[in-house]
Image 1 (tube, rainbow, N blue to C red):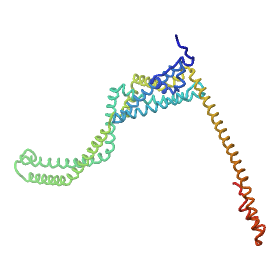
Image 2: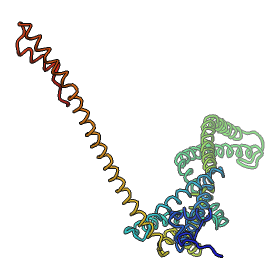
Image 3: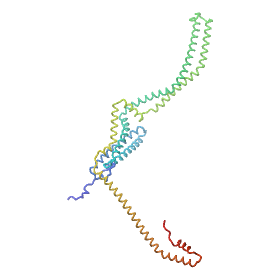
Length: 398
């Protein structure tokens, strides 16, 4: 024969650990939700959306930090930390959305702005990951352009000094070349006069040949003197020009060391690709929209899903707890008042008994003081009264 089971005991639902975890993600109270049959699955769905958003945030933030943090464990820890912040914000906003909350628009608006900001920012690492090869190529081109710009800046920086030194160098070389040309011309005239191929046409050392030789030797001496004077200046100028070139090469080399393919560099390369690539622009904005929707999933799910008995139970339970809190406060106040009244009655009876018991003692004390006063004629009545007030009468409580 079947047992008769009470109506209140016919259904006993025990959620699994994973279900309880999903309820926790959806900010539901499992004690109230266990008996709400229809709402169980709704809050499981909300918990799944929060779990998906949380997992996505962990992955995306971890990838973002991996581009700027050299240590992979450090990037993972930072990614989990940022994911936890997103989870805390989602749970706080979901908790504020309910059927009876008159300001449910504010959490949705705030979460929408937050999702738009985070989605737009996190779209960049996603695009960098999806179009890694193209962006690396653009990064290489951008770095080469940066090298050229840096080279132009360095050349422009030293241009005035370099021009000045080059003019000095050209002036010295021009004077030396002119002087050497004059020496060479004199030497050719002397040789031509000697071998008869030029001048007077007479072969041998004649007076004219001797004069031309002396002219040649004079010019050659002047040329040698000019060399001895201008060579140090020319060498110094050459040295300074070489120093400038070395500084330019050193500055360029130092600048090249800082060129990299870090996050900001790749973001700039991505922006350069977006300017000239409509297909990439479309996919980029599509990814942004998808990421924003992913960030909004928990709020959208909590808003779109209909409310059931759970919200009613929550409101009634909260009202009951408020009433119980007020009732407990009132009862505690009554108990304290009763305690104070009972203490007052007891203290009153004790004080009454005290004065009743001490009445005869006080009377005996007054008779004793009066007898001493009668026996001693030197004390006035006022003095007797002052002594009685001091030793017999009581003092009022402050």
